[in-house]
Amino acid sequence: MLRELFADADRGAVLERMTAGFDDRVARCRHLPAVVDRQAAPPQAEDLAWVVAALRARAGG
Image (cartoon, rainbow, N blue to C red; front, side, top):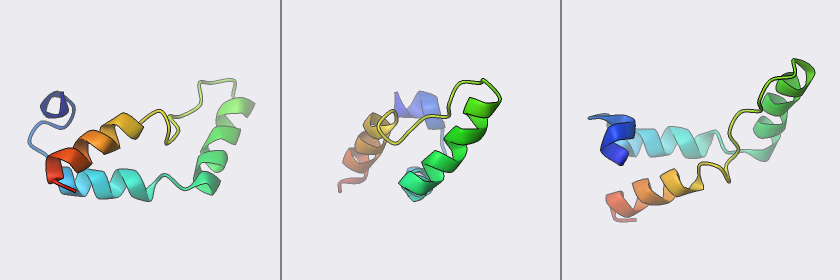
């Protein structure tokens, strides 16, 4: 599944970028414009937790 999502990207770099963007304040800032524009909200940390867990397991930590 990870191979389908990220092909041959550096999974450590993907994990670092994903976890860096999971600040609650940032999530609220991304959510507000979506609400105003009546669009679907961007994914939250909880929505992508399985990807982060899989990347960490693959990295051995």
